[in-house]
Amino acid sequence: MIKGENRRLSLSRSLSVIAGSMLIGFLGGFTAPAAVAGDASGAVITRTVGNQQYDTWSRVSTTPGKAGAATAIRPITNNATAGEIGANARLYRDSGALHRVVGFYYNNGLIGVNNYYQNVTGKYSASGSFYSYGQVRVWNGSSYYTYNTAQTPNQSS
Image: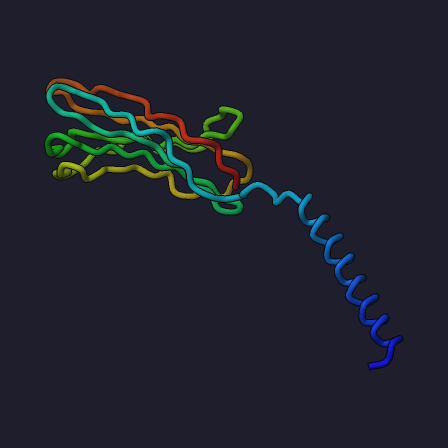
């Protein structure tokens, strides 16, 4: 190896190390954009009606350019007979404006303990930030009790 070639290799390696360090420094300061799609659930709330307990929750789901919501109820102490439970999924814009609502639908058959009944809005073309909180209804033997679910975190579409 010739003395001059060794210097050129050292200089070339040094420049590579410097360029690599600058690139790492630049990328180290780069912040990735926030997630633009995903799913989020609200907290599970347990409701008691008579001698029956139910878990209730809502979920918001987004994909690029679409958003949807679901509301669920699950009997946790006894089976739910036909018509005993209902759910109403609601999707809101982050401004608080109601974007989609389905209305109440009720179970038309037996729902076993720890199985859930849900109502979904479907996914609609929409962009922006969304959240969900729905409503559930439980029959107490003479009338329905209506409860709100916990609000989900916002999700962007």
